[in-house]
Image (cartoon, rainbow, N blue to C red; front, side):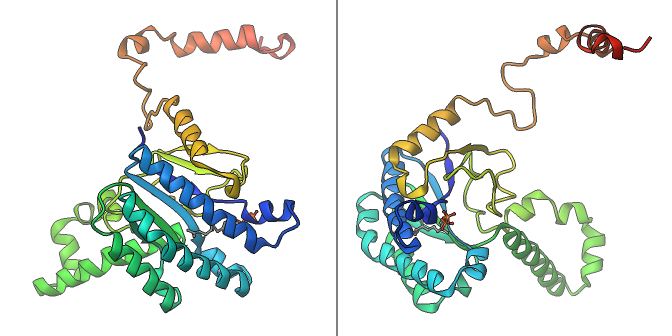
Length: 279
Ligand code: FPP
């Protein structure tokens, strides 16, 4: 079972367009899908589900009316679903530059987070006003700010601190991971993207280094719990290698590989068209 599934919810506008409806109705239907998928995640005891609900780019590049609608939809989603979240033991949290969202939206978000904080089932994380590059920038700034504070505490310069301890011990992958918004979660095992686009769109770039990716043509408003299960089933058939050779590939297999020179010879004589072979 994956521990963490992250979903890029895409295709609300197209879903509405296909039905000659306004884009807003696509988003509204998309909010229904969110609840179906969250409930499916709780049924299978998925520890972490992260949904890309609103990117920094959406905030900057979409018409104000659409952004305002999405904010209203988020508030009404939270207001009307907190009870169900509690019934389903779902804990609500957020990642992104939340402090830049309208204050009334932040208030509702905070209320929902507090109201579900004691739940121990699925952690539902909404990425809101989120961009992965800005998350990495925020993490780098946090690491640097901590280092400056420590140098001040010790009464030395930052340069002296780094020289004394060595830059490698002060800044490595763990420091960056530990300063990301996602520091309390495992990296996603599986990323799902709906509506067939083959892009990552600035989503969890650091965290998905070794994640499996599942892309479906289904538009988000048509996505249901059963489709989450299909994605997980496809994930379970994959062999994750994390840069290695995989579990089924042993040292014995390695010993039995043909020498590279022999393989090169075979390619030249068997696979290259005759007229192109070197004489
Ligand atoms: C992409 O569709 C989706 C979004 C930009 C917003 C996602 C929002 C929701 C699923 C609904 C609200 C969410 C919550 C948590 C209440 P798109 O508009 O880019 O679709 P298109 O590519 O077909 O135009």
